Amino acid sequence: MRREHSAILFFTLLCIGVFVLFLANLFWGSVTIPVEKVVRILLGGSSGRETWDYIVLQSRLPQSMTAVMAGAALAVSGLMLQTVFNNPLAGPSILGINAGASLGVAIVMLLLGGSVGGSFTGTPLGGYVAIVVGAFLGAALVLAVIIFFSTLVRSNVMLLIIGLMVGYITSSLISLLNFFATAEGVFSYTMWGMGDFSGVSMEQMPCFGTLIMLGLIISLLLVKPMNALLLGERYAENLGVRVRRVRVWMLAATGLMTAVTTAFCGPISFIGLAVPHMARLLLGSSNHTILLPVTLLLGGAVSLFCNLCCTLPGGASILPLNVITPVLGVPVILYVIVNQKRIQYFN
Image (cartoon, rainbow, N blue to C red; front, side, top):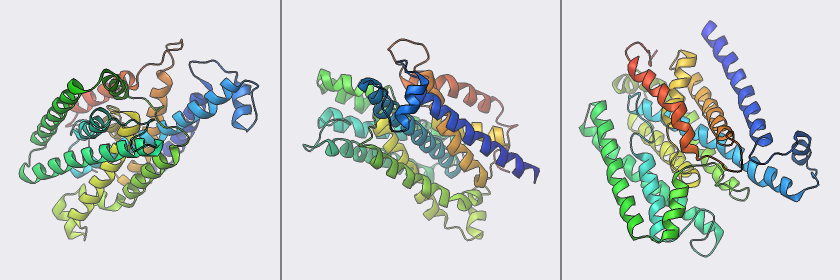
């Protein structure tokens, strides 16, 4: 009972934290805009400067919304992968799913000449739809390989090594595409690979948000089966859980959210791997009924904080997102590895 009350309190504080960080991302940026002007713009008024209006409504607002949804999607994807593979070190980047999505994007951008903001079939819509489809197919291909080897290899360490090997193969294919691509294509792909939350415009937000929300809804509907899987597949089957069907739905949701996030924001590292552990350590529980919503919110909060840190050094320059995320994620993973025997993941 006490644990439930503490979880509710923590959930409430986390909601407040996400709201505060969201506002901070709207008020803070490389361009200094007075707070009262930002409030006026958000309320539908005008600051008197078209540049400020554009920055708040067309840059900071969609960037903050993207950070919340992308962080939530990556964190939940990491949690589901750690559950389905029963491995605390499973994650979209470690198992090569990010690399697979990146390969799909590389084929569209470097080989077929598409871009997130440009065209692919002659319209702006075709550009980012093609990249999302390419990222999803790449992520799905890697997931299929991982699932196949998971039926042959029982060792979690071996499965992680296989994921790393798949990642190396996809990286070599991406390098090959870079070698034959134009200088403009290589530059665009390199900038995309650094990661940022500014790749989704307000016009693209309905598509991005719908796909992310679809993946999150599927994951929320799988909370009870995921709790059963913590006790083992045989026990879950005795409880009436169709393990194979649940695993397929979990991996499909993971592939969808990882692919969409990677397509629009680049291959963001460590959020999917570290945030679920942060949520477990803070809650002291692996009950997905409370763990999954907390992981979802914590992923959004961490992404907003990282996005805020990208603009903190000052000046007009903005740091790439993947410069910030390892600084937060690596200490968490090292702590988990060192204290793995003492941390209770399944209770």
